[in-house]
Length: 154
Image (cartoon, rainbow, N blue to C red; front, side, top):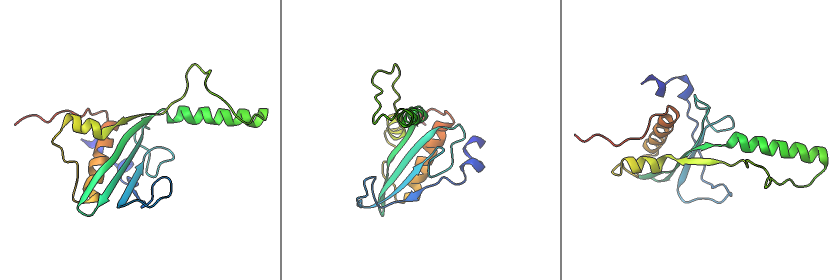
């Protein structure tokens, strides 16, 4: 399976951050990863946007989040258009409530899909590297359109 390797996936871009999105120190260490043009890592080969969080303490690491996001560019374009309109017109707010198609960000939870397809798959890991590898594999499989299926019985 050569689509899971290659120069586009060599540097996955994990960053260590002991603080949450609000600047509060979190118990345990967290590793964040984001794909896409503005993400921490490289863009996925198919241009999809992904995010993952691995958190825990020594000996007990878990994938807190691994999701695929869609609609980010639609929301970014709508915000850019609104800011341009505000700049030109002098308005101090813009409403999207009358738009036919309101932009929204949708996400697909890859961890939930994994545990639905394989309920016995471990939820915690001994090392953060193992949890990160599982999260990366979920992201790479999703990017390559490989469905998460049940493991065949032996």
